[in-house]
Image 1 (cartoon, helix red, strand yellow):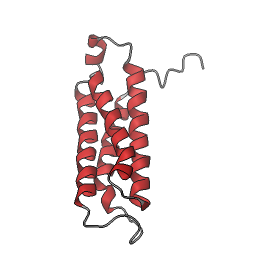
Image 2 (image 1 turned 45 degrees about the vertical axis):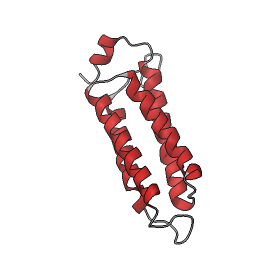
Image 3 (image 1 turned 135 degrees about the vertical axis):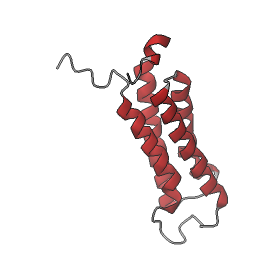
Length: 131
C-alpha cells in the first residue's frame, strides 16, 4: 500500500474524463427537465453559456491530452467555477441549475486534482505527459 501512487500522477484518463464532462455540459440544456421550473426553452443566454463553457472545458481537456500546461488546468478550474455560479448569475433554476452546479463541481474537482498532481513538475516532465 505504501507504493500506491494512483492519485500522484496526472494520467491520460483524467483528460478523457474532462472531454466527457465538456460534452455533457454542451448537451445539458437538452437533458430532461421539469416543465415550467425555472428554465425556458427560449433562454438563449443559458443555452449559449452551456455551449461555450462545454466547448471550453472540452478544448482544454484536449489541450491537456496533447500538450500539458498548468494554465490549462487553471482555466478549467475557472470555467467550472463559472458553471457553478451561472444559475445564480443568469437566474435559472430547476433541474438544469442542479446539473450545471453538479457538472461544474466535477470540473473544479478534476482540475484541482490535476493542478495538484502537476504542481511540482518542471517543463520537461509536463512535456512527457501521455508518453
